[in-house]
Image (cartoon, rainbow, N blue to C red):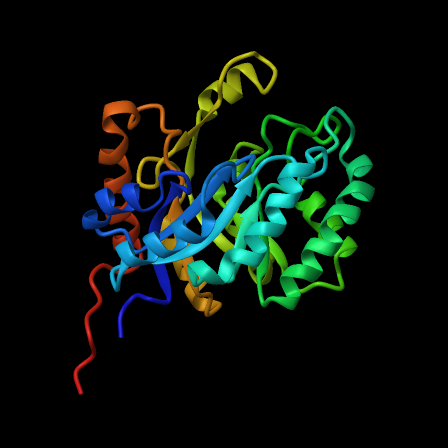
Length: 292
């Protein structure tokens, strides 16, 4: 018995693969989400899977693999989605994550026809292979009337997506509180509502400058929200993990670093390891077996 119901890990570029994992595994990361930006590119996916699993050994797992591009406007990104679905089993994961894509510069509903055309065959392909698809909730600086890269950035959009793909129970979310807080949404009620559709959690938080909002508002041209590593933001991650466990949710919370305004550059891994240990404490601290 251990905390294997909810593992705490981090993101890693698939192109860096085992080399990167080997360096940071000793810090205590329990899972790794391997990601590609837009394309798989020259990465040998089969070799990467083998090498990453060998490095992880019995210390960690590959929680998911993913590709973050615009599959509705980029044919290669859509093809790479299909490749990762086919290759997921090599990483011993059943989860492929990424952006849902967008017809950029248009209102969100105008992307739905293209979304259905691209993701219906991908969802069926994944279902046939026992794979789940999870869309991250990042807005990529888009809005409802001017989407960018990813239509899956708001609850209203999620409802439209799930309705459009109602034939597939393997379509869900790669959820994090950060992006929703950037829309001034309270993440905890949302987490409870969408739990059945949350397949993966990104460990990324946010800090909101409420004083600035109260004096300058949303349109004052000033930054009012900052992306933070867990432990430095406003979210109560003890509540997040309690809500997940009460629902008997299993999976991984993988830290998405490289965004914190303070713990970055030379302090990047300092911040990530702090976030790792913070999330482990929110999970209950070291596992303690009950007496018999």
